[in-house]
Length: 281
Image (cartoon, rainbow, N blue to C red; front, side):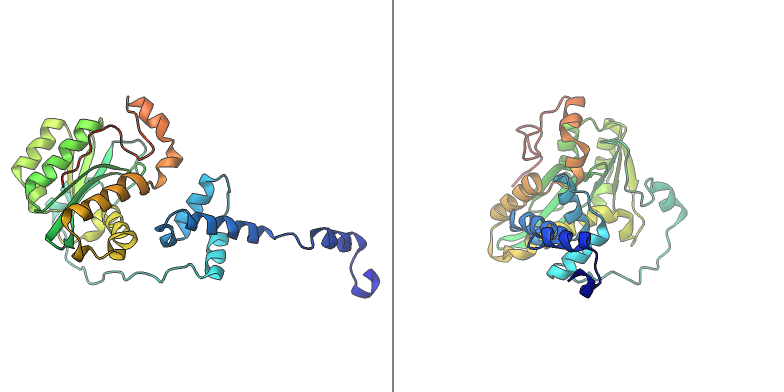
């Protein structure tokens, strides 16, 4: 038979031993399916997040292989629309006030922070969401939600982060909304020893990582439930659970326990440092 098929005897017996065994791709695909089944939100996973989840299970695989398998399984999402036409030039003053220059990486926690405001329509009016994100691992340090977007919303978000984490000396980047350019907000930053960084006018990419978090929150949660039929208090609870229980990006790879012990914090599995949450319904 080997002579007829032009194969070696060793090759034939190797094929016979492996016959009926699942391939490596089949095993990896089963693991990826198990990851998606862990949560109702996991079907939103793209290639990078799926690879990250596999790495957290001790499986080191390349992006190209993960992409190929996800395409074969029909899991790849269509590309999102990208904004064009933002051709307004920044002034020299705006360039100086932008301290991070679209560099959203950080070598240590609590050194480079991002913040912004987003909104969601509810049955009883709009709910405004104000988080602070740590560029080091993408963790949300504080979160406030209210029925208005006055400067007090941003000030209280900052105070919540300041109370729970050692952010003195950090850079806090935001857009140029009136809340962030108000004298009251800037005074809070000065007293805390935090440096302010501001995006240029009509330059959404200057705060792209913060906007990416909002896009993920809306795609994975808010656009999947009829928030316009729900009260603010109900939507607030959903967002709170998603952010502090489900949404844990690269933090696991940076060993949160080491980070917590270094700063005298005790983190629970929900990602909350203590009983106080920067959060108002």
